[in-house]
Image (cartoon, rainbow, N blue to C red; front, side, top):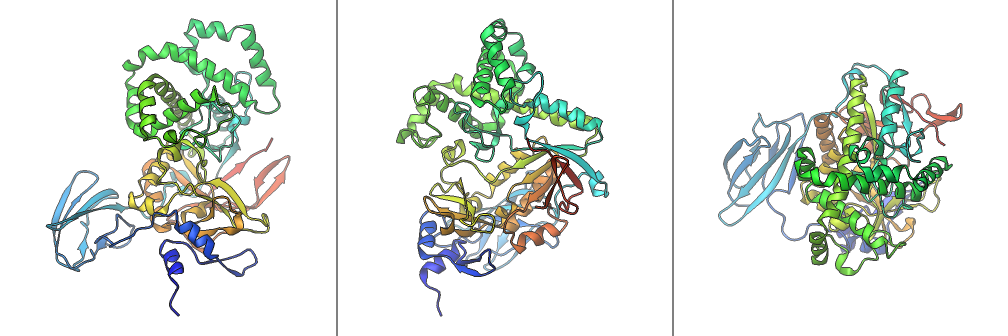
Length: 543
């Protein structure tokens, strides 16, 4: 029987028509759900080009491609290193890529007398990186910590990068090899009640509350800052923040942002003579600029709209970063944008110093970061790139024994079609930002590389459907960036785990899988024997 048009369109877009539920039965997706998901997806339409926008190759075998169509083509290949290759192809003739083409990102141009097409060629390695000690079969242990929970005599009521440095020294002194961290992502400094690291403003930039103010020379050398620091109201507020049973985010944020403003007044005149900061701005590009602009706008608006969160309730002309009203505001508030950019630079410098110290201490892994599933619905990232994120959908999980109604995480999914059309650059940028200055990266809900449960906005989690992602391409890029950044990868596999991910993890070419079996021991939680297939063991205690 011929498949009906709606089902065919859904399948072509990567929407699963059914799934195996928690009872082991096949459950059909409703037509309403298919229509709701299709309405928002940017699936390719029209005539297909001779080659897709990106092709990914992994060993073994010689990379080869065959353009579609009846035309003769001229081709030019430019390698990542700038090497040029060219030639011609007859209709339906295959092109074997140069045998010496190295791993990396290359650009292929295919043309006729009337038109040309671009295809990114990605050559990936066979496996992810593994530190030499672990590759030789050695076992290493480390500690896990939610950084914000650390307490010390010198912090300001929240754990910071100075505390992380001290903890590295202590763990290394006891023979430990790494510290595993919660997601360290940028949140909403002007809206301190929104504190979940798993619902961030950005997965590429850092939470500026982790800056250790005591390390900032511009703060210690500022007379105005020191007068404020030693004043009775400040000492009282600091004492209260330090003694709070839980992190008092409002108090901590007020203290730290006040201190950072004082430091900024002292630092700003010298920044034009800071080559490292200027390089940071250049490398960060628009992504950094718009993150800083977002933080600046939220800070400005929060003075009159203290309950406003994200850009959802902003005027319509402000709800995307590229709109004229936003551009005009940015042009008039360059100092504010520079201030928030400077905070990101301070955070990055201090975190990088922790990583460098872990290497000086001889740690094979050192720092073990956590890559969250996504960003919040009305975050800086969705404000910057609304095409990439499907704001009319949310990701979650279907009903299962632990969640009979399913789960809705209120995180907008990345559109796999847009990812592919962009040559996977957003995914590459995400990995590079998270693999920087660490020896291991844990991928939360690693099944998202294969599929995600999309839920139409406003519906219950049981009204969703699985949407496919290009798992083999994403795993190959993961291996390439892992090798380049010298960062091992660990995938978290809690929940309903498809066989494809289990098979991928079982092959040594990809990553280790973090198991779900955890036992309580001595007031803490440690993985049970065999629950980690990676040659590392983690110990943690939950406050």
